Amino acid sequence: MLCSMTTEFDAEEVVRQVTEKLAAKFPDLSQKEIEKVVAEEVAVLEDRPVHDYVSVLSERAAKKRLKKD
Image (cartoon, rainbow, N blue to C red; front, side, top):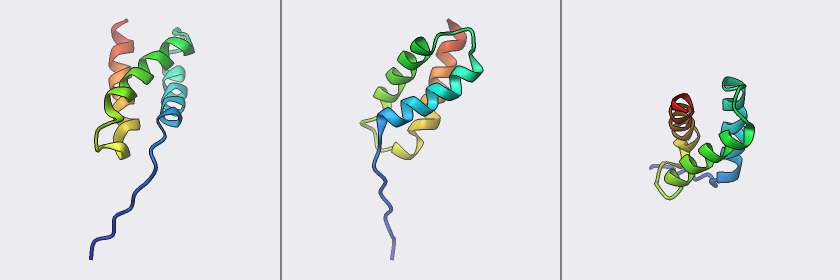
């Protein structure tokens, strides 16, 4: 018997957590700029069935974009 564990996805919380992490890694960028990029990356993933990984995936994508800027 498989047990399905569903967790409620909170996009705002993911954006907040990832923004905090990346703000420490990119101290020269404004928190608003980082938050904007993270929110865009979370929005891309939020309708996909990968909610358990949105935090990691959005952080990677945002970090890649922020390094280019």
